[in-house]
Structures are given as C-alpha cells and as structure tokens.
Length: 385
Image (tube, rainbow, N blue to C red; front, side, top):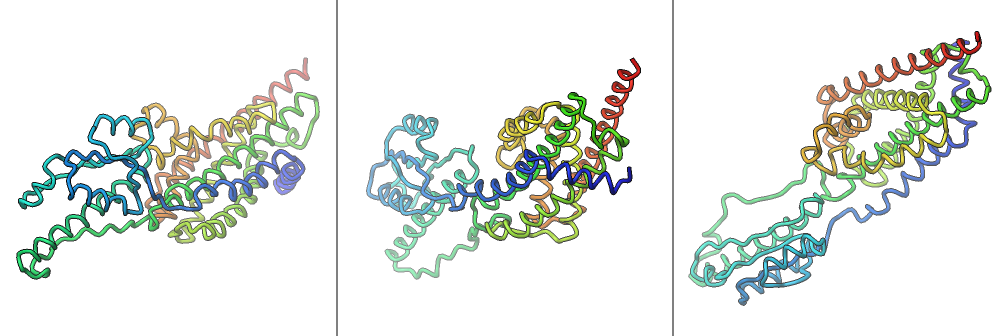
C-alpha cells in the first residue's frame, strides 16, 4: 500500500469516526468560542481591599477617599487592626491591604517623609498588579496634592519643584493589562494541543479495540513507520486549517496581540503540530478503549495548565514536576508561542524549544514503531500456535 493510499485511509478513518470528529472539529470550535467568555471584560477592576487606618485623621481619610476613587481597587473595610486585615486577606474576602501608620498627618504637616504600607495577594498576578498599581497611583496623587498645597502656602510657583524622574508604566507585552494577552493567548494554543492528542489517541484506541475483536483493517497491512507518518500527516493537514482559524481569525476577534513574523510562526507551528500528533498517536497505541484518551486529556487539563509557567510560577513547583512537564509538548509549545506571538521573538530565540519539540517528536515516532512491531510480532506468534 502506497503512502498516499495510507494517508487517504487515515483521512477516511478520521472523518468516519464520530468521537474523533466531535473532539477535533466540534471540540476545537466550541472551546474557541465558549472558553473566552469569562475573559471578555479583560480588564481587572474594583478589587476589594481593607485599609488599616492607625492614624484616623483628616488626611488619612482623604487618602482613603483617593484610593476608593481608583478604578482598580474598592475599599471594602476600614479597620485599626492589622491582624483582622490579615485574616480577611487569608480568607480571600479581600485581595490587598493598605496600612496608614500612626502619626501620618503630623509627619506630613512637619514636612517629614512618611511611609504607607500596602500589599496584595500575589497568587493572582493580574489582581496583584491591579491592587498595587491602584494604591500606588492614589498615593502618588495624594503626595502631589500635598506638595502643591505646600508650594502655594509658601508663595512659590508650582514650576519651582519639578520632578526630574517621573514613573511612567508602559506594559510592553500586555497593552491592556488584562486577561486576553495574559492567559487567553496561551489557553487557545493549549486547546489545540489537547484536542489533537485526544483525537489521535481515540483513533488509535479504536483500531486497537477492533484488533481485539478480530476485525482487521488497513493498519494491519502496512509497516509501523508508514502508518505513524501517515497519521501524523493527516492530523497535520487538519490542524493547519485550525491554526489558521485560531491565529488568523480568533486572535483578531478577541484582540490578542500578534507580533510573530509568518516564517517563524509557521516553522514553530509545524513542529508543534507534528509533535502533538506523534504524542497522540503513541497514546492511542497504548490504549485499547476509545473512551480513555478523552478522559485522560480532560482530567490532565487543569493540572497541566498550572504547570505551563504562565499562570503559576515554575519556581513554586516541585523540581520533579518541572522536569517531567518538559515531556509534554504543550510546555515548550505554549511558552514558545508566547515568546513568538506575544513578544515578537524571532525563531532563533526559541530554538531550544524548537529542538526539544523535534526531539520529542522523533522519540515518540520511534516508540510508536517499536510498539507496532511488538504487537505485530505477538499476532504472528499467536497465529503460528
């Protein structure tokens, strides 16, 4: 059987297998439109904080008013107990704390520099950034107002006290400082990864189940390498179209930043698709029940998301887990796409990820061929008996 004929048989097997179609085509479309729904507002605003006012004076209340006026934070409670504030933070009822020290007003009127303390829950990066940025802007505005009042009181011009260095925050890779470029860009790539592995796994598991029932097919009549390469090529053609849909239409629809040049993007995309296809093919060869690949993919999705490094820091994960996650195509793939597409990196800057995916792909192909040969040897031995 020629390679072209095997590819044709693979396409026919894919498009006549309802579970594979549902996962690969329907699943990719549904997740693409349903998953982004919680992130449509994009910007993090009105995060609850508690203010520990140990001064309880007119100036401290003015500072609290300015903080409350910030779009990023919402003053939920005002207390004089730091212990109570920490309890609220630990319970998740608030996401940040602003502490105004005792003697705040007196120090300001005496022209003595005074410090206010603020902290936020760093478990959620965007919430943490919103709380810290909102409080910081309010404090800067308060400080500027105090400085202006002092200059007017002393009869000086406002221009006589000009700040030589001014802080101006420019979010380079996340212009909106929201979830779209922070999480959604990576999640959409992860969806393609999961549906591809599940689809290839279901197809292989279905054929294994048919073998156990004594039903022979084209997959029993050809060599292992030809079968594996043909299956990878068939899924590659399908996912090139899905990549065009995701990166060409959905990224534009959701306002995801696109900074990749076309050559770097497609070179990295090609090796990523082939690696995922080989990984899914290997999974299918090891499973005899068509329902198991989908279950494995669904159960592993949430843990894998937190191991990718863009939601939860890798430094906080156990080293054995960080080592093991490198053998899942999504890790190098997602992080490579973030650097290429969101940060505008050239291909040579992600060559470590590229070569790792290439090595992982070759390794999966070799293991697939060995597994197929082992199965064919077992079948031949049983027929001889």
